[in-house]
Image (cartoon, rainbow, N blue to C red; front, side, top):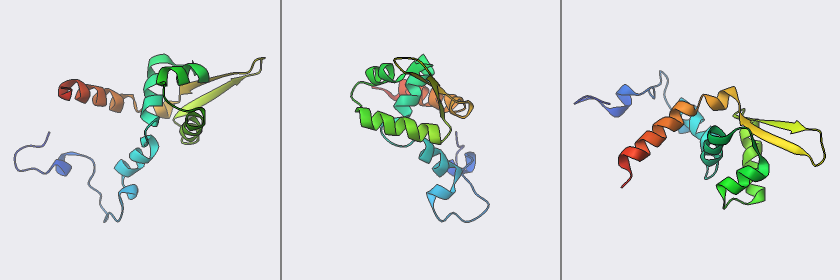
Length: 122
């Protein structure tokens, strides 16, 4: 927490040594690009709670997400290295999703979000 007279950014690792031309050029912007959107954090949440998880189970847990949207979001998370997709050669086909090491490194951030929610929820 900032002390009296300190700017919030003085206590966070948001200060850059070079001029910032765009938010996307910052570590904060990079992080947002990995987890932004309506569904990515929801998907990551369920992977923390229930990994490994199959596609249909994940869709059922999320509830209102369409097949296409879930497929696109999972592909983006996989391409960004946040989740892994394990395909099993059987009939019917079986695919499971899990958090990668990089995805697991977001766990402390997700815990902080939960703590913030507990503190500020009406």
